[in-house]
Image (cartoon, rainbow, N blue to C red; front, side):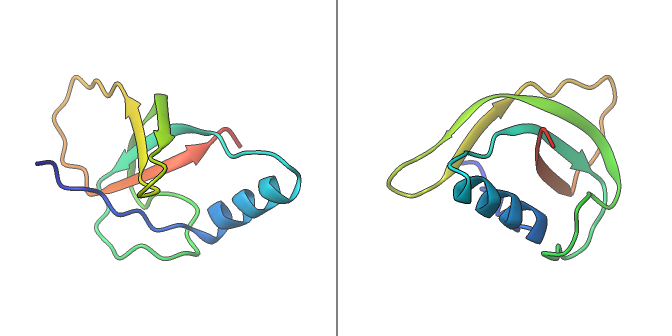
Length: 92
């Protein structure tokens, strides 16, 4: 069974979601980024510490009962790298 990734919702992400909700809009996650930084994530950060690559998301949804975020992306790289940080980003 795969190990789930637990994301930290940043202040910027929370504010974007609240702004969208207040205006009758939805948030659209468009990219996933991976990086090599090793640290404890804080709500105040707005970027990965050591971003290696960014890829477009090709689909996803929220599982209604558990509120689990599911998404898919094609991650292709000519090099093998260890990734320790993952970020999800909107178009803005």
